[in-house]
Image 1 (tube, helix red, strand yellow):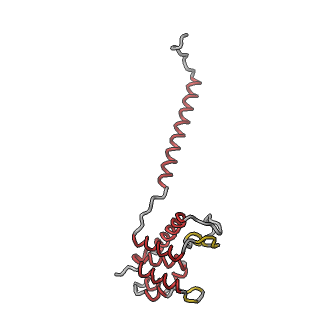
Image 2 (cartoon, one colour):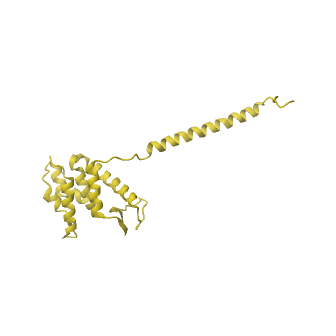
Length: 182
C-alpha cells in the first residue's frame, strides 16, 4: 500500500467518531446558550433623568462616603441581612455610587404611584427609612392629593428629638431641587 491508499473505516470507528462530533456540537450549543443568557441578564448601562442625577448629587453631598461606619457603607446604605456585605466594608466610589443608584431606583419604583413626587419621597426614604415616610404627613398629604407639603417635608430635620442644622439644610436643598411644581 502506498500513502494515498487508506483502509476502510470500521463501523466501530465510525460510531466513535460520530459520538465525538456529537459531544463537540453539544458543548458548542451549551456554550452559545450560556453566553446569550449572560448577555441578556447583564445590567445595561442605565440612563437616569436629570432629576434623578440631582437627587444622587444631593444625597452624596450630605451622606458623604462612609468608611468603617459599622452598619452603613457607601453613601449611607444600611447593610441588611443576606446582602453579602460585611460590617465596616469599604467600597470604592464607583461601587458606592452604583449601590446608591440601585437603592434610590428601588425607592423610586416603590413610590412610582406618586408620579412626579416619587423622587422626593425616595430621597426622604433614603435618609429616614420607608417606615418613617409611611407615617409622615408628607406621605399622607400626597396620598390625599394635597401637594402643599413644603412645611411637613422640611420638618424632617430632627435626630433623636433635636433639630440638626445640617438636616435642615439637606431638606431645604432636597425640596428646592426635587419638588416639581404643577
